[in-house]
Length: 484
Image 1 (cartoon, one colour):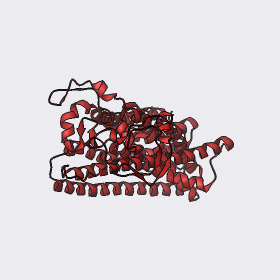
Image 2 (image 1 turned 90 degrees about the vertical axis):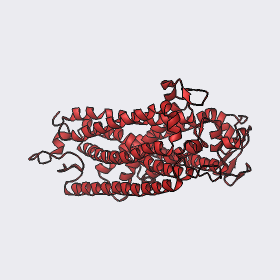
Image 3 (image 1 turned 135 degrees about the vertical axis):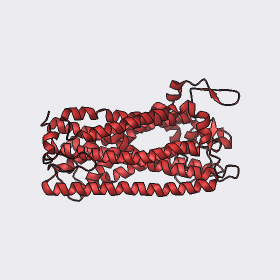
Image 4 (image 1 turned 90 degrees about the horizontal axis):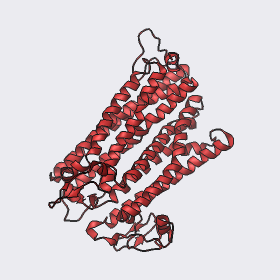
């Protein structure tokens, strides 16, 4: 959760390996999060479309996506469990003092995880065994369980950014905890909806990108068109919404975490008519090198007026604010997120313009090249968003209440580096296994399609239930509503 490196001599030696491991595991886990949160919804949209239209191709896509959803969930279990242990192992100071205040969020996430596991199992089981409508209705709680898990994690993280719901006793320990205030902190709403829509955007572009690559390779059948259109349309609709939510959360940070906002915009001294720097670097003396300077724009963006006063980093003592290097990292991440979001918005507008004018998909190969890259760009934007959130809060692990150095474990740094190396090896194996499984699933599906076309029934489903003996694998009969 902490992406920066502190090199001063007065910090514990174990801080660097602890931060490095947390940064690596969180950055790895977050690659899986968009599909975990949003793929159930995308799958059910396709499933519902297939049932409503009696479309076997749509149902085949939904079924295959549900298999991917299950594999992704299994890998997410591994990476999410590692993160859960790391909170206690690497940051015992935070969990020991503050766990009773904000730990409810982790409890909610754990309950949501078990619920989602059960629902995924039922959904996979039901493809050949339940009536079509019953099967679909049993899948409807899946997106809600995914959103509940996001609720728990974002409640905990927003509390770390704007801690509320407690008072401190003379020893500095939290007492008189008010759970509802600890959950619904000032930053919870902006963070939660910004995160959820980001997951929808990212998952939509990731899934659509697979079929955009197929389009570029000459696969223009209905299977690829439908596989592209549904997730891309969802992502395109959510992209301008995300742009508005992103502006809103930046404004909330301006009001509720002004020092973090100063790091995001590399503002050194409190002033009005503050310029905006695109990718500039903050120097230790407060000057900015490189980048593009736009006069007064930062004040205008913050308060819609050039005379808006923007709080600078020097408004607080040096130990209570990000260093120049940390502010530069935050600023670069924030700008990269904004640039990537802007490019995705242009792609969404291109798609909408062609659809509104011609009622068809774009024909340009450049559009599909952009669509093929959009998923990677969206994942990168999500990574940049978390870097902005976590690095901009430095040096606090609990904003204005506990520093990162106070929360870190007392375990020797050598042991932490060894543990970090083991985690890296395990993650390489885990993600390598995920890639191998997905490639084998793709190869199997392609063979099935070549034998009988995209609407041909499968005789076997990877990681799902198999047809009863003698059924002949008649997927279409059950999937298209023949048993309704």
